[in-house]
Amino acid sequence: MKNFVLRGNLCTSRTKDSLSWIPHGYVVCEDGRSAGMFAELPERFRQWPLFDWGDCLILPGLVDLHIHAPQYAFRGTGMDLELLEWLNERAFPEEARYQDLDYAGKAYGIFAENMKFSATARACIFATRHREATELLMDLMEATGLRTMVGKVNMDRNCPENLREGTEESLEETRRWLSDIEGKYDHTEPVLTPRFIPACSDAVMRGLGDIRRETGLAVQSHLSENQDEAAWVRELCPWAGCYGEAYDGFGMFGGSCAPGGPAGKGGPTVMAHCVWPSGEERRLIKERGVFVAHCPQSNTNLCSGIAPVREYLEEGISVGLGTDVAAGCGESIFRAMADAIQVSKLRWKLAEGAGRP
Ligand code: GUN
Ligand code: FE
Image (cartoon, rainbow, N blue to C red; front, side, top):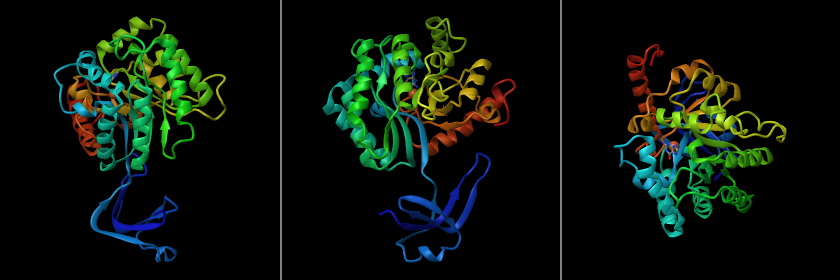
């Protein structure tokens, strides 16, 4: 059904500083899109099917900017480690199972079904490095009706052998994945997904940069999540002035897709965490228009820290929320909102010079 009217207590937010509210108002769906919110229903919509939700709250669909579908099965467990140990001991062994399509179908089926009945309407999703399982996840997400970006992960170093791709293999599988799914979906898009710099060689990053210039695809990855991780990136990429530059050097950090790219094309870049940015990194994030996925629960569970979100907002950097399952223990984006407020209070008390919560 593409034309209908909902009635209830409407609440929405058009800017980061405002909420608007229409008690017992009407929201109209015309040809599958919102035609607006009204205190009185305009005459021309009065014959359309009306669903009256009484005193219920009606909100716009919410966005989860960062979630790992293959980690859903172990959410809520394994919270005793910091990032690099957690990846080796918890995340990688589970992700290796997605080589098996029966397992992937079952686990991704549960993930997709639960996402469908969550408050999230749009999401940026990491799959695993496995092309076939990623395609299966995309089929399942398409069937939910949610609008999502899904990424086949690239990882060709510093991970267990059963997850590690060869460098050429990683790029070939990415190209094959993009060709397999071309034109297949209405509301499921591919997004280039280098896992993070420690797991991606310069050669893979260079190849992904080429694919990005050719296709204009969006990018998602992790940035400055944990201090040991950031120190490791300084060792791996001594040429980069900051962690963000290790992506930027390959045209994988915001902007339109760097020199030679198709004009006007260039999907967004979403970087998860951004807990420990240097001043230089903050300037680059802003300059390139990179979107920050703030993942407060994950940053708490893995003892990563508290991201300087107040500063990002005041500098005009775009910030959204991510649940980051399974470092975050569930897909509730409402819970992420509460977590964001709570950690910002701690940051205000504990971090020198932090802005108000
Ligand atoms: N950095 C690289 N991979 C991951 C992951 O799966 N989860 C989190 N939280 N950080 C990462
Ligand atoms: Fe993550």
